[in-house]
Length: 107
Image (cartoon, rainbow, N blue to C red; front, side, top):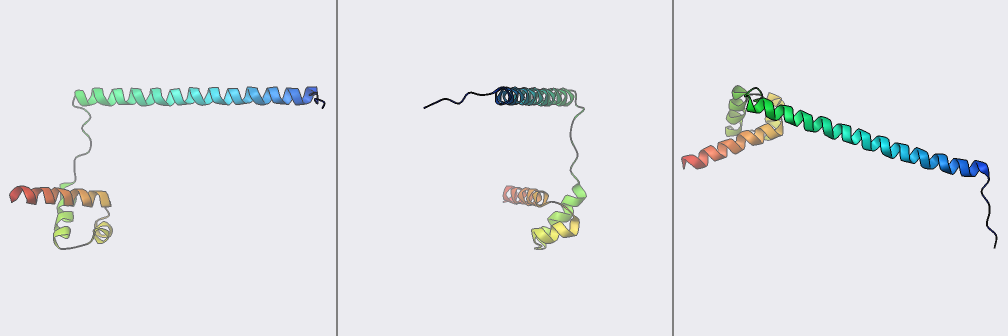
C-alpha cells in the first residue's frame, strides 16, 4: 500500500479552499454581529421614544372598524368583508374578538 503524495497544485488548492472557507465564516459572523447591533440600537431608540411619549404607533381606524362590525352583524363572511373593505383577515378577527368581549361583558 502506497500513499499518493500531493503535488503543489493540489496542496495549494486545498489551502486556498480552507482560507476561503474561513474568510466566508468570518464575514458571515461580522455581518450577523452588525445586524444584531443595529436591531439592538433600534430597539433602544424605540424604547426611549416610547418613554418620552413620542412613539405611540398608528391610531385605529374607527370608521373601518365600525364598518367591519356592521358587516359581521349582518352575517357577511370574512372573505366578502375583506374584498368589500380591502382589509386583512386579522383586522376582521380583531374586530370580531372585540365584539365578542363587549357582548360577554354586557351579559
